[in-house]
Image (cartoon, rainbow, N blue to C red):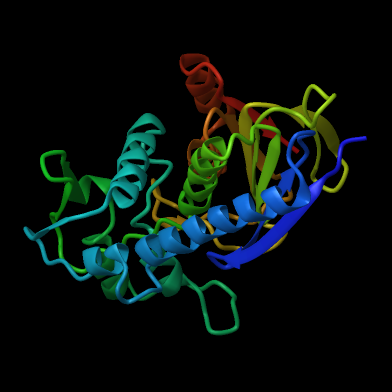
Length: 282
């Protein structure tokens, strides 16, 4: 019988979990591989978290209009993906939208209409069209003052994708990765099995995953926390939960957020354009 080796680690304000179920991998080897993965996730958090004052994202947030900064490959990958998803979803995904929620949310967590002047000022610094990516030297150029880059809707997925690279170096392929139950990434199924079983929306749907990522967005955990980049207003709280399936966890992470904004027709059109991308709503 195949042993299931489970490991967990707190990072990026969530719990990361690794499950390895491969006949030729014992507990000691699995633990060593998991330690290497968690070390990489910690390194990525140091680079990508806007809450770390020395991170590259924090340094980007201090740029003035016209200034640029050379960033690491990890930051470049995330910013490039975010800008691409912004374009492909017609602006439904935007990593610069964060400051608006701070204006709309009261200290008790309820929502209120901000003062018009404060809202107008914030809007001058919001929009993925307000930064440029210069491939030569991996430089990011801000086109507005006081921009706030926030990779929270893509960083955890990206960390899972990088974890896969580490595990492949350790010749581990039968593995399941989980970032806070909001993003899942499955490679080959456990030894003797075709895929990994998953349960969504508190048992509303059971399915299997293999060589695929799945991310979910909704309001059950955090309540009103999503901004609509198209209208610059909070997304009304809904009972539905939107799931995106994609070839990579970073992409599914970003798309699950965008799908909360997009119409069903827009989502179906996007999924038709990109093989391996699918949508579930529960």
